[in-house]
Length: 221
Image (cartoon, rainbow, N blue to C red; front, side, top):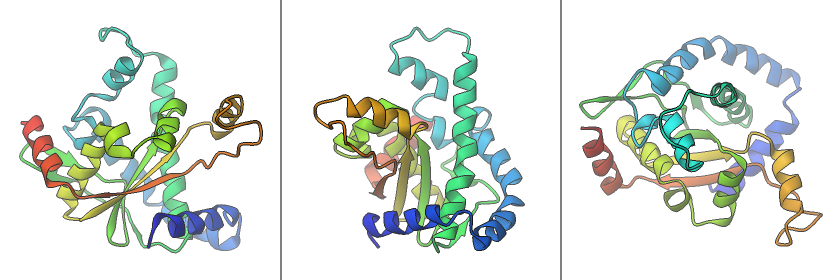
């Protein structure tokens, strides 16, 4: 199955999210979410993991804005970070509604001698990695040469999840937090024009890269 087929199935599921089938499935998924969120948030701040290997989240945010490293964490950044995590169960539901076999990890996986990994989900035969990517980062993904080039930290993270989960490929799914705002901004650019319609889903299969995995494990040590 290629990304265009997956995209089509996801959009069909989004259109039917208010259906009785969707509501029943949402209830089943809901009981699993608290434990999933606990494991997931632990990877953000208290457990050495692939998600913070290259930098902690706040360091990444400061570097992108060329800010000095020693600062108090702004409230709006805290809101943005947790909102991105809380959005992921919606997409897990959409994948399930689209007919994919979604398995939520109920435990962490050993990832080398020092790290613990908690992938967003295992879907069919691949790892699912969900990302909420700010407007310009999403624009770079749209216009660029793939995750390895435009977001090498995410590429390393995905490969370490593949290593920990013993899988060969990862479906990387990125969405902007405010698609309407990004679309409005891009419509003001000559490259896109006033009638541009943003596709708010960036999908890419990341194949397992042993060199990246080895480099990530060395960095963790």
